[in-house]
Amino acid sequence: MKFYIVDDDPSIPMILRQILEKDPNNTVVGIAHDAKQALAEVMLLDIDIVLADLLMPEISGIELIKKLKPAKPTLRFIMISQVRDSDLRAEAYQAGIEFFIDKPINVIEVKTVIEKVTQSIEMAAKLNHIQSLVGGDVTTPAVDRHRVQKDKILSILRFLGITSEAGSADILSICQMMLDRNLSFRDIDFAVEYHIDEREKKIMFQRIRRAIKTGLTNLANLCLDDMGDEIVVEYANTLYEYKNVRNEMLYLEGTRTTGGKTSLKHFFDGLVQAQ
Image 1: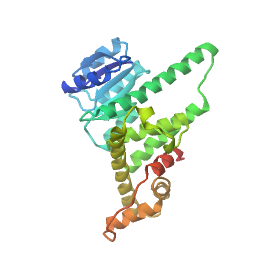
Image 2: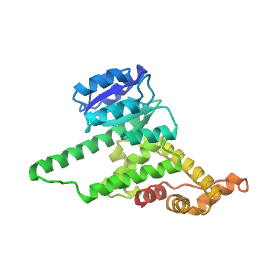
Image 3: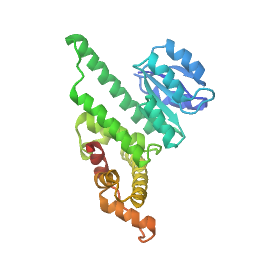
Image 4: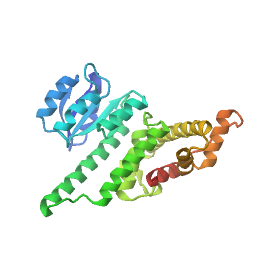
């Protein structure tokens, strides 16, 4: 894959380049420290994936993507940021990014995100190749359904208020794998799929659990505000089991010493199956 990196912090492209080019199939074809330079160069270069900083002087990463996407619709975008603001992150997803990579840079997160985006590009290339051979539209109902489901998953994470959490990229990545491979959470072999050892897997799960726990707390607060909201109750049951949301509510009210528990299996299976 051919990458272009734009970040006004000179150390970030250097770090990312070292990570990316450890894979002999990857090449960083360009680096910029401001969006204006990136805008000019990306238009001329042959690039697969752009990694762009969210907050840059004059032109933000989001504005850069909005300018590039109409001209180069096949480009994939990954946002680099230390910002946790959920509205900004939601705006970035709406602009067309695939995933976030959080600062400070985490090697495992970078590898995981790049692998997922690379797989998506390769799948799109295969579909285009088949279409060129047989003619007509080869977009299958399953592919369309998966896109709708992925959008739904992202909207649920926004509803839970966790798109700004470091584990949100991991959650989206795992959900995409579950959808693409028709897997349950327990079916995933993380050592094989993510090329990580037990220590790295533990670190990933810690990020995910923190994000899921934040979602539980936010959902419990919503329940306290409006117990009759059907969407809140649905997500309470589907993602956490209502008893855990109830225990978190009691904890927030100060009538219980511990909050609700979370289950990765229950959360992921419920998230992927959500309608």
